[in-house]
Length: 507
Image (cartoon, rainbow, N blue to C red; front, side, top):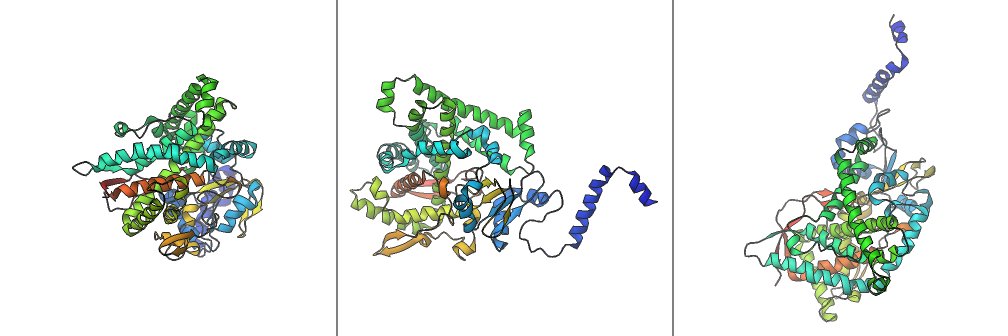
């Protein structure tokens, strides 16, 4: 009788019941899990546990990777591509170098960021990527870096950043300053001057009480694109974009402001005479608008601004937080700066910045714990096998995970959660740091590695060294709260709510 009734019901109506029944039986009878990945069920995969941990994905992934014998896990959930997440340096080397051609950014990645970054260098593969890389590589040679230190960096720090901090330190009552905001404004002005040949003056003291509209637009665009990537169902943002509602409407409005800003700069340059280009055109945009179309130049500039603005400011913000918790290490950096300046007539020049080895160790250690880019993904072009034995299917999203890698005991030891810059030092002589360890970029892939290694790596270290040393020499920075700040990844990481500090003169 029951069988007759069951057979009379269309099979399509029985499927949901059968799936739920199967999932329940599997859940009741399953043995202790050997797989360190998340609990998964038929059809929906790990969607339930993913949703529960959506606000702590970094720590959730790190916990599972730490429990995995290979430091690799597989995430399969309804509505998203199968994702392989790894903190294994051998896998990272295989993805970024050994079999580079099988792991491009891929269409799923470029689709998420396409509205924002367009065909910019960080959102394309193949010839588009290669041609842009050739175009910008000359901006990072030693001659360009020396010019950057002496004519751009020094001017912005000495004439804009330090006067703002001096004004705050001179207040009778201690003034609270958002150091993260100041460093982001500084980085934005610097990258705009280098790439656009235009100074947005976001660090002017009188403008600090209001948000800069273009910086705000970049913040919104970054957050909304990150929401796309983290959505439990990837189709959700596409539906919202179609109807132009919610986060997708905010993203469209932010992108329009960014495009208008850069297009206005481009048009101003095109209106300038050829003679003016030859006399003043040292920036990258000037060179591009003479040879490329506006959209190509615009997309390239957006990618460069995004990278140059957020990464260095995030790294410096977390470094100052760590110094506030470790004043003895801050004093060690000050001692090193004093030695270098004494040898260089009391000024930090391009060559002398290279001598600040302990400061570089501090920066690296800060980025190990709080990487400016927490993860990066590629998409497999064909079936593959990672060195640890993990099978890769065509179309899989393959993610290497700097945040988790910095927390693997097998890579950094039992003291991996401690801020210990000395772990980067290889030689000390008479109290002077002579050399640093040559750490594999596949163990510490903060600047990627292989063919797509970050071209601006050296410029980033130079900028961070100069800014941090200039601030530490003149001011004491103290956090207003003893609480640990919240690390927010997005496309690039930042400190939730800013880094609020008291500023006082050092002498």
